[in-house]
Length: 157
Image (cartoon, rainbow, N blue to C red):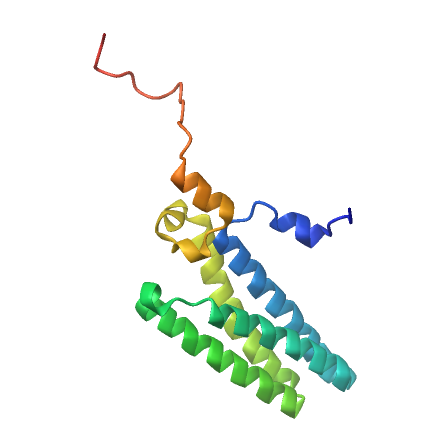
């Protein structure tokens, strides 16, 4: 069996939102690479990095569920379309500055997802499609919580 990379290991047990954040992290990594390729005049490297960014944006776009997310899904759809267009334009012009503009936009939305990932209430309202298999199973079969600090019951037998 092949050994898992650090990145693969860090995603084991991740929640659905944490996986979305990881996709944003990947997009940012490739956007930074594309910007660096502009400085180095590396056309092939820039195109490879841009293809990976576009693949991530298309994946995120395809996973949107407008019937569930309504206004939020529509806003994210518009955002992904704009980032897609801006990324392709930055690549066409080989513009580091334009890549940096895309990086700023993606970073802002990534931070919003990262904040959402820290909020335990978000997991409760998260659409089933964004939940991992473990999250779906846990919600179906919640484990009892035994807390020695819990207040005693008023009921007696």
